[in-house]
Image 1 (spheres, helix red, strand yellow):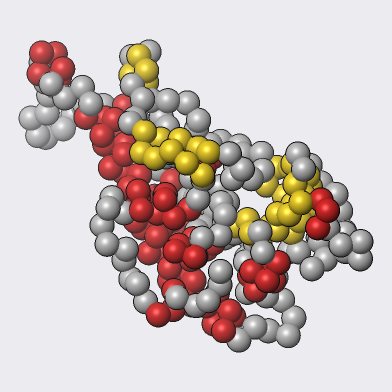
Image 2 (image 1 turned 90 degrees about the vertical axis):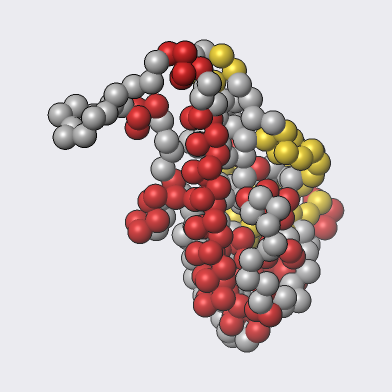
Amino acid sequence: LDARAVACKENWVITSPNMDFVEEPYIFEEEELCCRADGRLGVVDCFQWPQTHEKQYKYSICIPRKHSIPTLQIVWYDPTPSDFVVPTGSQFAVGTLQSAKVVAFEEALQNLIVFVVQLQHKILDIYTLLEYIEYVYPLLLNPLSCPPQANSTWMGCFVRATEVCKALYFAGVPVWLICSKEYIPLTMNIVRSVQLTYPDGIVRSMYMENSVVKPFPSIWQGPSNAFCQCVYTRVKEDLPLQLAVCSCTLD
């Protein structure tokens, strides 16, 4: 495949046949899967940043990018203490708890943050699967003679196999192929060389309350991949909607 954009990271070359930029891949080293201050998983969160293509969660390539779908703004909402200000002028009797009782619920906001994020991820998970079924899967079964324009609202993914990259390219999925420098063919046409695009606006700091760090527990330690995050998102539930459409051979 020819490259519309190419960038390097250490000894790796990252190319894309259908995107004008190359995003920083956080897939080479082991990662600690741990919620950050906003309840999400930082730069290795498949709902925030492209990850590797995983057979078990292949439709994650259609996760919408932040604020790309106006009707889904609620899935990027972050609860804050200001959301719990006592309203004034209410016709109902509204007050606050005594300080001694508040201590018993000191983790309430921290737990609420995770609950909200898990609900948002479930919404995104359903939306993503429907996008995959409607748009991507038909093109994987019956590719077009010419690749369609990549859907810039989708997260896309990193891949290591050329055949997978080509299949996703012809399905209109943003895709980045990672390989060693020695495997770059001399005949490859490259439109532009670019600098890596780094995450912007993704929270990496740990959760704090009253200037005290209260980190969330570690969930998993190991190579970064979308499937582990999918399992975490579903909170050990059975994988939803295990349909035939999600079992196409795209290794």
